[in-house]
Length: 191
Length: 258
Image (cartoon, rainbow over all chains, first blue to last red; front, side):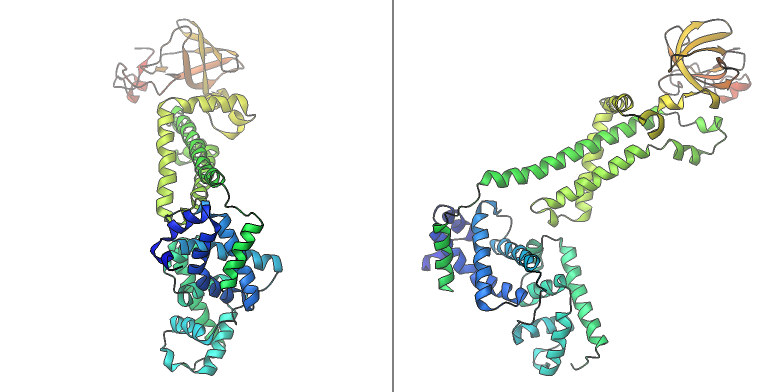
C-alpha cells in the first residue's frame, strides 16, 4: 500500500477500472473523510455509517468512467456521498440531525459562526447552541459542516453541492445569521 | 476500516459490479449540450422571425390611425415571438446549469453566452432571409397565427375599414387602379391630385402595392398614399417630402397631380 501515495487519484482511477483491487487504494485515501462526513450528516451509528459508506464506494466505482478531471476526486466523491445521503433521507423519511457531532466539531461550527475563541467556550453554552444548530434546515447545517468541520474550500463545496460560488457563500452566511438569530431568540448570551 | 475495503472489493467481485460504460456518460454529457444547441437554434429562429416581422411593418402608420407612437408600437409588438425567445433563453440557461460544471459559470456569463448565441445566430438567419420563411410557415401551418397571434404585414394591410389596403395591381387607368387584395377580392382604387405615390412604388400591372386611404364602399377605396409592398418606398425616389401633400416637392414621393 506504500506505493499508492506516489500515484495520483487519476492514476488510481484508471487502474481501478481494470482491477478492482486497485480501487482499495482509493478507498483507503478517502474512507476517513467520507466516513466522518456521512456520520456528521446522518447521526447513525458506526455500523450503519459503514453500510452507507460501502454503498457510496460502490456507486463511485460504478461511476468511475464519469469522473472528469476538472474536479478534484475528493469533491466528486463528496458529491456522490451527498446525493446518497439525500436519497437515504428520502427513502427512510428520516429527519436529518447533527447531534452526533463530537464536542470539538461543535466548537468548530460555533466559533466560525459567532467569532469566539475556542478556549472561552463554556460547556453549558455549547449545549444550548447545539440545539440552535440542530434546528437549522439541512442545507444550512450541511454547508456549515462542510466548511467548518470537513474544512472544505468554497470551490470544493461548490463542486460537492453543484451550486455556484455565490450560492454557497450565501448559504454559509445565512446559516450563520440564522444561528445568531436563534441564539438571540433563546436569550443565549454566554460567550 | 480495513474490513470495509475488503468487504467492498469482495462485493464488487462477487456481484460482478463493473464501471458503467463511458459511452453512457458521454451520451448524457453531449446530450445536454446538444439540447442547448437545439434551444439556441429555436431561440434564433424566433429572433429571426420577430426581426422579420418588425422590419416588414410600417412604423409610421400611427399617424394615420389617430394613435400615439407608443400605443402603436405596443399594438404591433411581436409578443408571441418575444415570449418564445424569453422561454428559449430561460431553457438554455437551465440547460447550461445542468451540464457537469455549469454551476461554476456566473449568472452574467451564462446570460451572455445564451443571449449572445441566440442573437448572433438569429441575426445570421434574419439576414439570410430565413425569418420571412419561418413567418410564412407559421402563417400557413399554425391556425390563428396570422389572424390573432401576431400583427403581420399582411394583417396590417388587409384592413380597408381602418384605411389600409394592399394587393396586386390588375389594371391601371388614368384616375383609378384596380387591385386584387390578399383575400382575392377586387377593389377599385380612386386616385386624385392629392394622392401621394412613394418613389419606389411601381404603378403597373402585376405589382404589389400598399395603399393608405379611405374605404368608400364595399369595393371602392380612395387612395391617399401608395407605397411599394416592400419597405416604405422612400429610397431612390424623385425627392418630394411631406410638404408635397400640399403640392411642394422635397423627398417623400410624388403627387399624382405633379
